Image 1 (cartoon, rainbow, N blue to C red):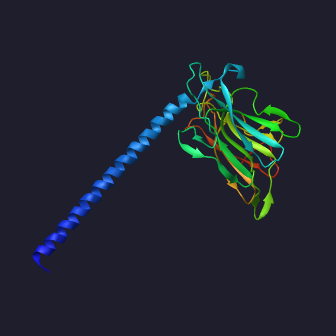
Image 2 (image 1 turned 120 degrees about the vertical axis):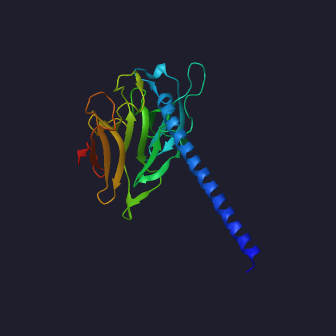
Image 3 (image 1 turned 45 degrees about the vertical axis):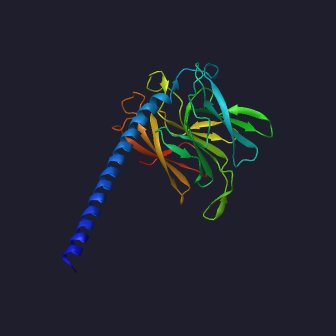
Length: 263
């Protein structure tokens, strides 16, 4: 192999390494910018996705958006959003199937999130209306404006568990429903509650004690159980903070009721 050819090959290899290093540095920079932007959007979102904690429905502009088909043929749900402020400016997203979660991230609704359940995430979602097709009656999950984080509802399409059909006849909802930290606003700085609601939306049971803030959940398919990770408000300031104890509760989805503490 000639000296000129060897030099040409070495030069090409050096150039490739330099280009790869540049691409890596650029990618790393982009990722850092992206992470920082997400954090900034998250802080803005805490302020934006808020409502006054003492408002009634006639004091806030709302708009129905979509009818949700549930796995209960006679029961349909209607999403109710905070819509426009007094200046007519849009304050909420009008679509329930593509919006933003509380951290400012885009998402889609998820079918069969757990066996027998579909899930809806909220952003400016301040209530859910329940309509009974048979009795032609409408009622609401909450009697005052709230901020709904997640709603679990019976799957519209038949689902199964361990190859056996499974049907749910209740709703689960995580929600900011009280100005627990007394700053006059409802937002994710307050304690997040978790409720079990019957098929008719008339009976509502608070699953986790009121001095906890639910953070996340896991599903146990063997026991058909839902584990709820909740932060204990040890200092009683109405806000779940990262330095406070994290406990685990569980509820049976076969026979749901108040959660039992596991850890």
